[in-house]
Amino acid sequence: MHPETALLVTLAGAFGVAFVFGFMATKLRMPPLVGYLLAGTALGPHSPAFVADVSLAGQLAEIGVILLMFGVGLHFSPGDLLKVRRIALPGALLQMVASFGIGLALALSWGWAVGGAVVFALALCVSSTVVVLRVLEDRGLLDSVDGRVAVGWLVVEDLAVVVALVLLPTVLEALGAGGHGDTAVLARSVAITVLKVAAFILLMGAVGRRAVPWLLTHVARTGSRELFTLSVLAVSLGVAVGASALFGVSFALGAFVAGVVISESDLSYRAGADALPMQDAFAVLFFVSAGMLIDPEVLLQQPFRVVETVGAIIVGNGLVSAILMVLLRHPLGASLRLGASLAQIGEFSFILAALGVSLGVFPEEGRSLILAGALCTIVLNPFVFWAVGKLDTWLTRYPKLIDRLERQKAPRLVTTDLWMATPANHAILIGYGRVGRTIGEALQRVGFPFIAIDQDRRVVEAIRTLGVTAVYGDATRPGILEHARPEFARMLVIASPDPYHARHIIELARARNPEIDIIVRTHADTEQELFEQLGVSKALMGERELAFGMAYHSLRSAGVDDDQADDVIQHLRGGGRMHTREFTQVMLDHGGAPAPR
Image 1 (cartoon, rainbow, N blue to C red):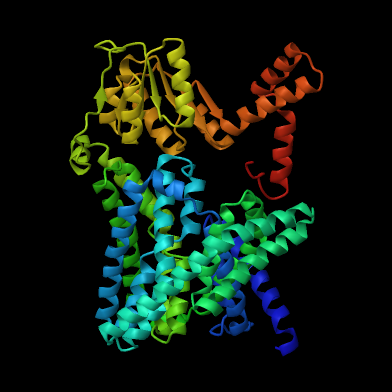
Image 2: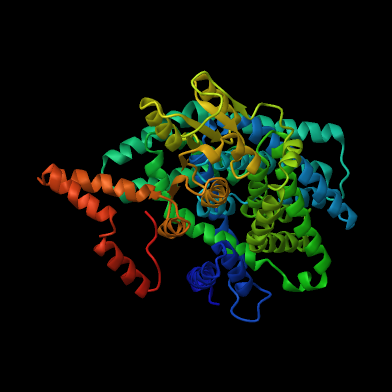
């Protein structure tokens, strides 16, 4: 490869091969990240084919790390963390400690030095934010209570990794590669590092908090989009490099703090949108460069270590997380699903492994094991979800066992003065979030009795004080739904966003009352068709109802009278969406269905 074209050839090769492998992974219903890692392996020095410039790819990947951490800081929300702090804060910290212990014991059993074992253990105890958010979004759980718990859990892990990235070089240098060091030297080194970080954060809080939003505001007033994008990139990269040069902190911490500072500005959403394409592009390079470092020969020589690494990740991140959530009084079924989503590692593990290698305390074999463990756990994640689903289905047959596991002590049902002793001809409302609250208020206004079921204990306690009859628990469990007396109910309204939950609840309710009127919330045409096949009275898709409302007001604004606008909307509701069906068919003919928007 000619030096003058090395950058161009590396970018072209990385993006081209990553696109092919990422597309193939998507077609196989796997995260594109799997394809990016395999693309890196195909381009790496251990491949017999074209070999990219690994050192140059590593430098480009460093930009990916900076933009990745900048994005994490930009979307960091203390409010989201505070909402689920009782579960996410202690749960995530205890899970990381347990997973760290498992990884440390495993590495030491292999005869590794303490420094390398510490890096290995840290890399195993943090799940991939990218993968978890993708899983939650695909399953319609991102905006649910479970989704908020998972996001809070990830935020705690991300913050812990940021702290680790700051302290790890100091701790490892003080310990030495052999794992021996003076405690006084270690304490002094850590104290100096903490003071440097504190000085940087205070400077950014006092100066950057005002200067950066002021700069972006003035740039935005120029009306130049490319100048605004350039300013965002200049701030993120400039703060990261400046923090490293002046305070000795990592690029990752500098970028994270820069993102947090901009997040407080009114322009944070625009900054995120403008930086997203660059962030995505360089993040791909980061994963490709990580894949380049996978040595297949090491994996073939040490297959049992790969299996042990994968087992440690699934147990430490998945099983331990599920157990801790149950101990913290989260419903068992939801805990199992969230544990399954966390049973993998990803981008931050690669960053920690790369840091360990650069410090000379982590062997290349360890990095290959981390990368192989990430690749295997991400590929196995759908199978973990399948196994969890089977286990959850089996557990629903034993409600007393679940009550014992959940240490259920609070009353499942509280009867208010508004409710008669034996409920009949009532409604059962599943989920009391934003959608459920609106439905509940509508039923209250007309005096129609209903029982609400929700998995969040605080929500149940709050609505009970407002005179609403409420059941705490997971409605997919027969013992919970029985409290709402479905055999005497007139209707069942499922306002929770999880289609898997909804299907199970419909089956349970139908078994008790075949004539019950069912109204369910859905997010996709395929889900709506499935629910209609199950015989529900009405399956409503949120985006479609929004479209109907906007179409109605658009017709009225165009001068169409009220009756004609109503007729058009009713025709659309009745299935007369010729343009939509034709458009979908055209998209299918061209290789894929349109993305939901």
